[in-house]
Image (cartoon, rainbow, N blue to C red):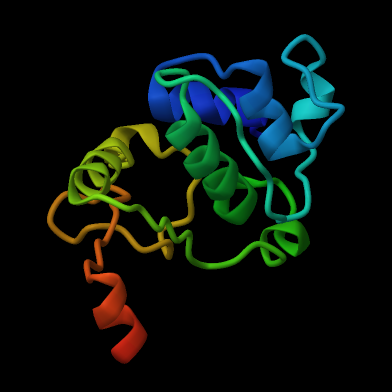
Length: 141
């Protein structure tokens, strides 16, 4: 059974911060108590107020990915949405975020083969949909 901490480390090559563990596993989760990193949390909107450079993108993406496809219980995985959507105000942020969420195939571990991956590289990657606010208002996808 893969804990969130093990999954995060394998996918990112970094140990998760405490707030990243709490985002994925609930408010009681701590890095010191591995048993708390085996449980997921319900999918809900949360405000993340963390300084730049401390892994907010990784926190959100890894929390979603672990709960959706790598959580030990299928019934829990099915409660999380199939897609993670980021809405960003600037093209540079879109490109930076899309680049940062590419996970090489050798780091994916227990992710099922049915999970969508890039057919060229076998990795989990982002798909970018770009439009202006006006375009989206007129022609939502």
